[in-house]
Length: 126
Image 1 (cartoon, helix red, strand yellow):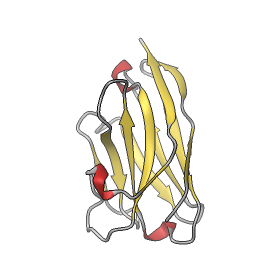
Image 2 (cartoon, one colour):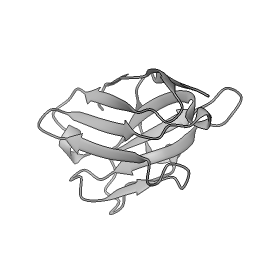
Image 3 (tube, one colour):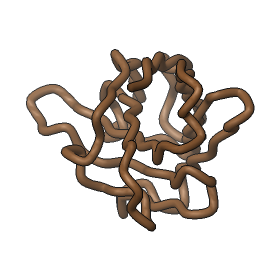
């Protein structure tokens, strides 16, 4: 089990950028796949991006592909989400999550993730 704390959210104009960070506790962080999800008011929590334990494999939702980049620093127990060319429809609470499984590709299904952070609000104004 890991404890996760997100940071870096805020208010930004459309076309701007934000970098989210998720700091993890626990010595096993380097063995976990990590994911970012988001939830807008009245909507289901949806997959955004995921990264394998090694950082060599990543996956993205079609809606963010080419604009967002997920990365991780296992020495610092941190995973990042660089968000560029933000759109109003990116407005949501963003959550990071940890998957202790051993899938070759990091999962897109939120049910594969065991541990979640408290979320950080991202608001994109038009």
